[in-house]
Image 1 (tube, rainbow, N blue to C red):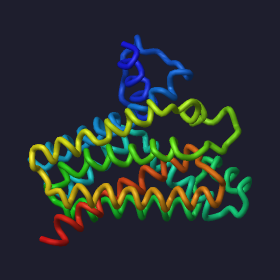
Image 2 (image 1 turned 90 degrees about the vertical axis):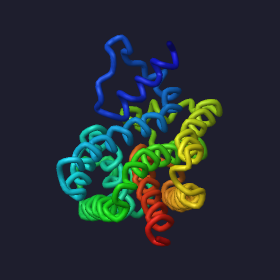
Image 3 (image 1 turned 180 degrees about the vertical axis):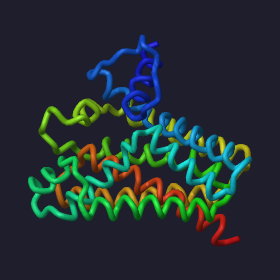
Image 4 (image 1 turned 90 degrees about the horizontal axis):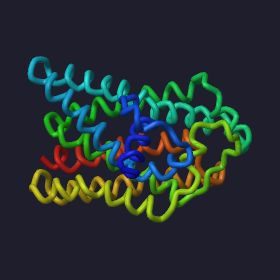
Length: 258
């Protein structure tokens, strides 16, 4: 029951989906609930894929795709997109660490943030449009893998914002080896299932992981050089970067090679 409660805590924190009333809230359990970050991503991906599939039965694929993207934003509350926009504003407009963190905390969106957000959404639409019905597989895989990468960033780097009022503070405290190892196993599960049922070729799966790892390493190296660690916004940006990297890898391995 404790682990079920932790899953629902993670679900309530990272999405706008309703959770049972008995779950309640515990900031002390939130850091352990982070182990279910990839599982939450899988659920989000399956729901979004379901919207895409149902809409495609009655509407053109592009319209169905746009509806699925809207569903994703509604389900997550644009949680990670907001982090991407804030990160772009902070790193684009700030010079030193303190200035970057101050800009990132500002709720108003700036030029860099708007450009990053529009570019990311447009990139997702174009690549998923190219994937066609492969989108049904791409969505759950990308949402799961991208959140697995964000979890590994948390495990490998330190949280640098000292403001106790920040929403990400409880998530960043006390991430144990058990938490991130379990999260990694949950992130691997859908890929093993896809390979077991021979849904996608091995090269596509390897391309997904390699592209995500490379993209995440580059992003982690960049933020380490700029601010010495990560923030909640930087984690949101890492999720978006890894998600797009997954779509690009699938497109290159499935469509680019025929």
